[in-house]
Amino acid sequence: MEGRPPVSIPLFIRPTSAYNPAMALSLRSYEPHDFTALHRLDQACFPAGISYSKMMLRYFLKLSSADCVVATEDAHIAGFILTEENPPLAHVITLDVAETHRRRGAGSALLAESEGNLWLRGVRTILLETATDNEGAIAFWKRHGYGIEAVLKRYYLGRVDAYEMRKILPARGLKTATHPGEKS
Image 1: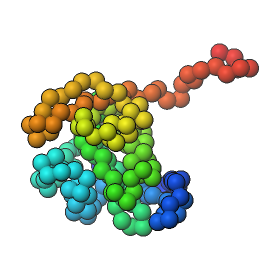
Image 2: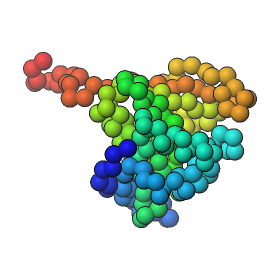
Image 3: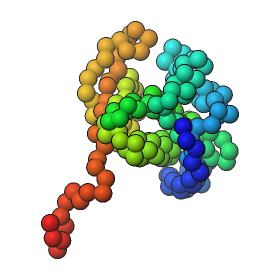
Image 4: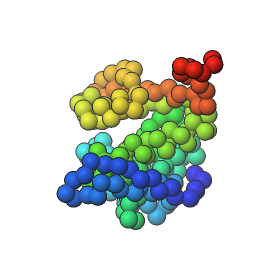
């Protein structure tokens, strides 16, 4: 995975007593010293048996086809997205966001950055799986243009069904509509 300079993205969130109305996240590529924090976050985000073991997470991170984008705020990891690609297809392995950063734009920022990276490398379709009983995740993915393609019976732990979801990335740089006064 190639390193790139961190990008600060102001994310505007609903004001709450515990947060500023805007939080600045930095997005960057995974670095090996992040491993322990990423594993800890994955363990916090998913139940035992669904969260990745250290061995499996390390395996996915070392794939030559893997890309991992990390979100940080004040030097603390707020979340990460891990994908694997075989253009024109890619697969979201996991998207993990710390509870303190959920519903504040961190997941959306990670997904947008990852989708942009994948598109630049020739990916046009992204697949993922999510549990059929995870209403929050299903709503998140649908909000970002992913549709349900299939039900995978007993996908998690041999007993929890999952949806396979898919998104076709839109073409970039092409006009998709003509506005009044414009020539087509």
